[in-house]
Image (cartoon, rainbow, N blue to C red; front, side, top):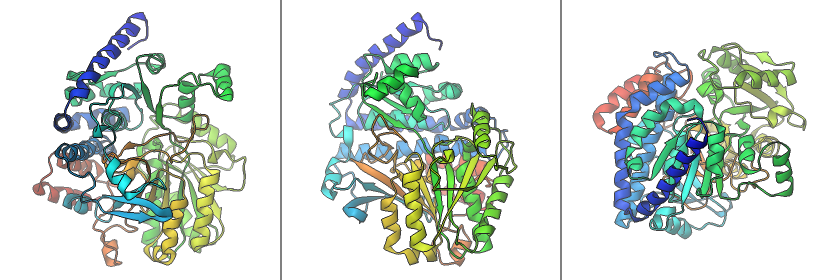
Length: 571
């Protein structure tokens, strides 16, 4: 769609139609809203193969590439799981049941309330053996408030909140549809979704999936450039905006561009005064807590960190950018050698997201001692970064490309972990997600100190032996920046998404995974049957496993499990 007078009129008509749709949405009972989700779920399942095929084309992946598993898992599989979980929430509300009935509620450091959200059924326990997740509420939120306020906009469905424009992301294909569903159900708004031009080829798939909402007038989807986006977010008929992107994009929308935008930001007079929520990425850390690891442990965790950076060609808001290790770890050099090899040996793939070459060139220009680690021309390691150097740009610039920095701090045990947490909080830009890697013996030695350090991390998702991307994929978990950012210093954004339980005032999600994959996990006394996860970039059967997982999410059945396990075990 090209912006001109006729297009502006067409967009205005869409917004007027959505205003009428809002009135019908207000009258839609909870049971009917649940049925819409179930119809959407069925449509996603029916078009999942086309979704993955189109997404693979966008990412320039060969049709036989194992890396297509990323598109199955971070595309239709993620959306199917969320639609099912949200439908369960709507069913509980419609029946008058407690949303948190059956969900363990416990305490977390600082008097916080924590809700266990993974696993929630026998299939999750089998397919994600060894993984678990909990959502922590903000300090001061009581268990009673958590239980009574769960449901958000669906507690009073007749009280709608206008029209939201969702500015879709261009990097991960499930982001835009998940954001649409959250606006519809958490905020009780009807939605106009503007796709990122990169994902325009998915328009037919999304229109087919969202047909139940589109046909009733609750959703419209458009394509187009930045001028169309600006027309929509500033339209007087639009009540709220949600974006996924960079802090620069956020500021351009809120304050404006050039000298005018800078002046508006300096004086605190935003051009956009309507509510805006956002997910904006950042410089994500992975903290490696020293321990005594086997050679297999070192290789596996090196692949794990390489995945955290190189998944989706490194074009993830949650891609790890800075690895923090102990200068006093006796196995430091062995680990760094394994990390270099994992980065170099990861499958070759195109740098498909626009601007990657410029961002990588800038990183290399500012770090003359960079190492091109192989695999692709863009893969870059920045060794020996100094966390005490307040001029270091790798700590403040999200590269959004395959550039990984490594920094060291002194100490071991709790001393090292506490210092690394402080560095992650105070030196790195953004608060979207942070990763911790530590073996089980070290975890036991830290005791309650581990959870205290997690509480000190000012990040919206914390992964412990699990990449924070698993939190993104967990339907009942929350996703977003750590709360508290102001418009003039937005960092990783404001507000949460996903959150299928519609929890009130969540602070963070904490995801735990196994330190070792099966069968080594079982042999070393760790209860986990999960082999190498299918999101690892080194998984040889990821495409088959992702396709089978998606088919299972579309129609769960016991008979499908052997095929999933057989593929996963060959990875």
